[in-house]
Image (cartoon, rainbow, N blue to C red; front, side):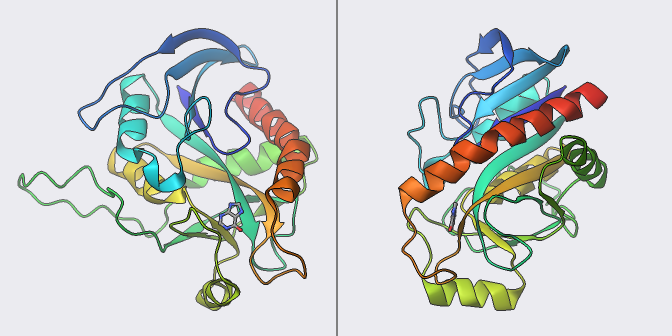
Length: 244
Ligand code: HPA
């Protein structure tokens, strides 16, 4: 079953008919919210609100291990994660939807593995290509089918937050090769890989990264772009499910 993780601006999914809400506990703790089982475009899907429902958890407070483990327990076989991001390069203008193909992790102090319980053999998962190629392709096709302003590929830089970055940090990230910046892509992506769940991301650019515009980044501006853009995101996800 396809599972969605909704980020900022996507606490509940438009068009999803709720069938059941599963209060799941895992050996890693409780997920951010109940796992919603529902029907979208006539197909069974799962949905989890990354920051809780209502949205109360900051990016560093999310129990990513419990979230991924709970989705797996609920029957997820693949995950599409939605997030709001800042744009760094010209490839990621505000209001565009990016389907990234790479990640650089700048977060710290988060629980980043399921494999830290000192059992042999020690596991190092391959993470050269952090996203599922076929899931990404399905997302790109679905985005095109709803005429979204979509960008196929880009590097997602994951920062710790909850504060936004300094202009110097964004410049450094640009030199590193990041196109977009968000706070939740890691460790979520690697945990999905560890549980062998194909994972891809759909990133709505909601503001220019720090220092990339003349005005201060405001939550009002971000919320307006989210409000305008999440409808398209849901349309694309529905088209993707419908095509499966
Ligand atoms: N930086 C980090 N995370 C974000 C941003 C940003 O500018 N915008 C939305 N999420």
